[in-house]
Length: 409
Image (tube, one colour):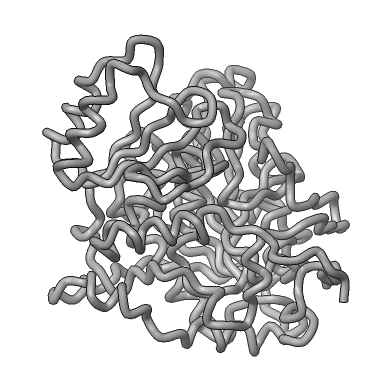
C-alpha cells in the first residue's frame, strides 16, 4: 500500500480506510442542499449489465470499472491513422474486451466487475454530445457502487476532449472518499500506438492500491495522475496532453511502482464531515442544474456575448478574462446589466495560471481556478443555493482550497 507523506495531515495517520468510508458516506446532507432541493424526488437510477471477470480472491481489492466509452473503445480507419476515427475494429465488448486482452496479468491486481454504461445510453465518450443528465446519472451511480462496503474503489473511462470537465464534476459531487480514477486514451483500440490498455491497467493498479483515498477524483493517463481541480488538456493529439500546469502531477504509476508526491488540499479533512462536498446529487434532480455559460474576452469583445447569454436564460456566467481577469471595455455595460438582472458572474483568467483573488465585489473572483472548472462549480453552486454570498464562500474555500499549515508532525 502507498503511505501518505506526513505533511498530508493528522487525519491521514489515524484513520483506517473503513473508518474514512463510513464517516464520509454517512454524512448528513448540508442544510443548504436541503433548502435548494425541489419537492420532486430524484428519478430512480437505471440499471446496467455487470460482468465479473476472472476468479475473485479475498486477498485482492474489489474494483468497479465503469465503461462509459471514449477513444479507448473506438477504432481508427486504419491501424496507423489515429487522427481519423470511423474504423470497424474496436473492441467487441468495449472495456471488457480490453481487460480480457490484458488477462491474466490484470487478474493479480484486483477483483474486477465491469459495468457497461456506454452500450446502454450513458456514454461520455463523445464529447460533443455529452449532457448534464449523463454526468448526473453517472456520478450518482459511482456513489451507489462505492457505498457498498465490499467495494474498494472505482475506475471509469471517458472521452478526453472534455475529460477535465467530467473529472471536476465528479470531484465536486461524489460523496465517497474511496479512490475514483478517470482514464481514457489518445489513440484508438486498433492503432499500432494504442495507449488505452496501459492507461486502464495503471488506473486499476492505482485504485486498488488505495493511496488516493480522500483525494477525490483523479485523472490518469500516460503514467501520471492528476487532481480533478487542476488537470487540463494541453494538446489535441499528443500522448502527454494532460497536465496540471502550475503544480504538476500528484504522482506516477510506473509498472508496479506507485509514487504519491503531493495531494489535493482536501485530504486535510479526511475522516471528517468537512471532507464531503455539499453537492449531494441525491438531493436534487437533473432539472435543478441551471444554465451557466462561459465567455472568453478578447480585443473589442462584443457585449452581445453577455447579452445573448442572459437572454438565453443563463443564471450564471463565467468570464475568462485577459491577464488576471480583465474584460473588454465594450462589455462593461452588459456585465453590469447582467448583475442588475441577478445573474451571478465569476471572473477567471484565460492564461491558465493565477487570476484575481476575491475581494467581496459584485463579481466573484476565482484566483487560479480554471474557467472550465469555475463553470462546473458555479453550476452546482446555483443548483444548491440562490444565495450569492454562499456561492462566493464555496469559490473561496472549495474552489481555492489550500493547505492550512506547513508543519510536519
